Length: 305
Image (cartoon, rainbow, N blue to C red; front, side, top):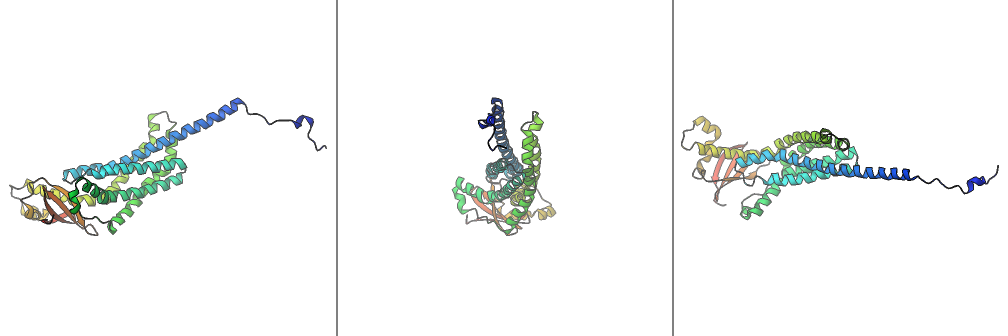
């Protein structure tokens, strides 16, 4: 057999792709690019709306309760929390989409859960007081330093575990849900990820609110309720049993102030949050009320403020 190729194969050239094949390949790449962009845009919107929903579920009703209790600057946690949560959740959704791995999606959303819980603690205790001082510099010498103690850290750990379960599920499902939603021609199909994410995030918010928000809010609400009860019954006789149950005598040292407009601030608290102080501004006259197990037990005029 000859070692040389047949003459008809010496100058044989590789086949040239047809124009139709090249066109199909280009169209395929273009379609993949368009789908990827749509996935990124959809994921960003989904993450942002998830963060907004979580902040709203966590702080909207909380804000209403604080307004009714005459708590000062009640809107700060909701506003700051919404902006922060939207950014965190958008970042988690974006990274999940970019890496396009369900397991990495779980990791990104677990990290988001940890950061969200930290924000739930730090916003009312660290960020909000600084903004209050920015708006009202005189509060610098009045508001105490709010330490992040062991109890708060334990709440943060429990909150991270609970929220992590919910957000981990969302991270696992995000890629599949988004991939199914983008080509869908029906409104229900296109919005299906929202129908999954929003109920899950609302359930998660209930757990976090009961764990962290309620202990911070309840002493101020209880103190305001007692003041309001005293105002409503100034000219009426109160049953002694009810007066003892409500610790109505707590208001006696400040009875001449309760008719003034007032606003409440969180005061100092012990390591277990069993004893929490509430600062009350009666038009420039500052009162320090102590609550024990969410029940006001003692109020006094603070002449040093």
